[in-house]
Image 1 (cartoon, each protein chain N blue to C red):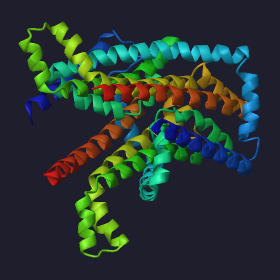
Image 2: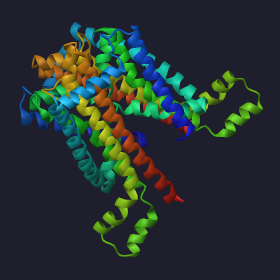
Image 3: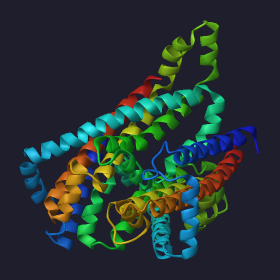
Image 4: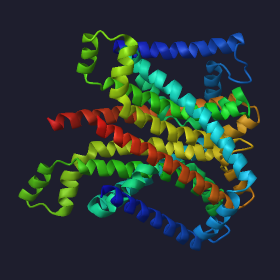
Amino acid sequence: MIATKRAADTAIILIVLLLMWQALHQLVGATALPGPVPTLAYFAKLVPSGRFAENAWATLVCFFYALILSYGIGLAIGLWMGIHRLSGAVGEPILISLYTLPKVTLYPVVLLIFGLSLSGRVTFGAMHGVLPVALLTMGAIRNIPPVYLKSARTLHLSRWQTILTVLFPATLPEVVAGLRIGFTLTLLGVLLAEMFAAKQGLGFLIINAMQLLQAEEMMTVAVVLFAFAALANALLLWIEHRLHRRV
Amino acid sequence: MSRVGWIRIAVLVIAIGLLELCCRVGLIDHRVVIPPSQMADALIRLLISGEANDQIVRTFGIVVIAALISIVAGFALGLVIHALPRVRQSLDPFFATYYAVPIFIFYPVLIVIFGLSVIPIMLMGVATAIVAMIIATLNGLDRVPQVLTKVARVHRMGTIATALLLKLPAAAPHLFTGVKLAVSYAFIGVIASEFILAPAGLGRVISDAYSDFNNRQMYALMLLLIIVATAVNMALHVVDQRWAERRGIAKL
């Protein structure tokens, strides 16, 4: 019942967005913004092409490495700062101010260190993703009811047993929320890096299309990325809700 | 200051000191990172010379305008959406997805439509900020206690009087969280757009300095952006905390 209602709402939003797109297209003309139908036609042509596959693959590989780094480092920092209270108290405001900083400012530094390479883009993507993962993991650990930890102590669980059998299941829903936001921001970081300076990837494809005034290609790539991000977010949200209900 | 505060300052000072040391000793090439003391020196000289003043005013001006538009329009939209439960329910998936989509992919589209001017940059600033304000407004209005609405009815207050005298103050702490997010998001939206492509502005000047290997200029302006962003965010954070405390007391 709720699921069908949500699906209907999503469909309504999609239709409204498409109508707004069409209206804007009528307003500014086809050269600036192609309508949904021509974009779809172009989509059918572009997506099977080797050029698209090549660039999409480049973005995916970069995103994959960046995501592993974001999750690995973010979880490690969050775990450490959540368990060790003093480090958490000292570090949290620092992490929060780094989180609100426009990290794009620092991209030239990353470029100077790594050059125009895959590692530079991966690092920049990870810089975006690490902080939300760390902050939410830390928050999750701090919010554990003290009685859980007391029972772990009563049962003489070792440090690792406590982490695996008490901390991990109790914090999972919030940690997954952190992973979801980390996913989103890592993708944003990777795409920004590709848009700013790269010779491959979907972000580069958009900027290149803009410079060549190929509005159809630009919209097509943007829509593909939009769909990818929205679907991935919906999937992770769904997992998050299920975990919340279980707890 | 608390012990934790002192430790935090010590950690930051040591980190900056280490960076300075590594740069001075030559562990870090000065073509990659210049020592922090030189960044500060370059920034002070740049500010005194006034060379970059136009760009600084331009960028921060756009941020301020984008944030103001987002706050006012976001609040108004939030009020309207809150009054229409069916619309709000339909918009739920939209709000849940909005910040998951890297909206910067639409910046080039805006450039093609509006040309390479200040408008696409401002629109990106508004686009990144406004939804946070709408969501905060909805949250705030949701948490106006039922009893206040009843008080309004007892006193026979009209819709507008209820909204202004009761709902606005009751929702204010949540609205401030929206304001805080809107400002820092507008900042991110504007700066990132300027980096990708812009006719002028701090982001453009920094990326030009990067291309010209003008590290002093690049690090000076980066330092400026970081200082301003951190100062603004910290100020907003402090005010927000204070509101949150009042919210806590109000609950009791």
